[in-house]
Length: 255
Image 1: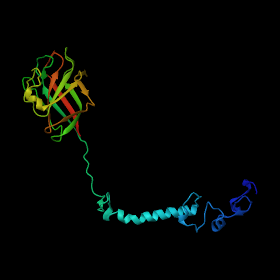
Image 2 (image 1 turned 90 degrees about the vertical axis):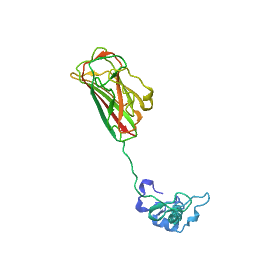
Image 3 (image 1 turned 180 degrees about the horizontal axis):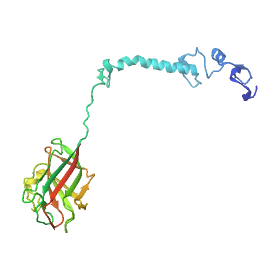
């Protein structure tokens, strides 16, 4: 037998170690290679522990696929229906899926505070009036929302001695207590059902003509009773204020 590198495809393929060369066509016709098989190999020959020929293997695969295809009409219903149980009734796999995107809203509440001494835990609101703030249209209606951010802006150029952090108390309706500017904060019995908790606001930062601070990624989940939220801004520090504009802004999204 010639060395392997001396054999070319044009010469055929040596078999049985005798040095004779046969073409692929000849091999397929006379079945000289059992592992390739002949055109006449039956599909049922894929049994037992013996070697399977390529031809018989392909025939067996074809036989299985053909038998599966015969079941398709029983598995599929008219108009693309698909049976999902043994009842035989097709379920149509078509139609429209409606999705609701999570929308967000930003709502500010502004007031001018009084020129007065605010003790720690006093409500800071509209000078001489009701201190309740309303955050308009923060929700689409009575819904569950997530409060993601709160910011506080004060129209003042410097922190006043004693002024530190603030706390924002939230309600789903106007709190019945109706606390006035400068009153000590109290979670009254009448307010309990509407109370949603609070968010701490850090000490405002001096930005020249304005004091500003924001708090983000809060993730506070609350249930509104309408489109609006309500709140009291309470000082944690004690300071004597001048009558300047305050603005508290809430950012929230629906869930």
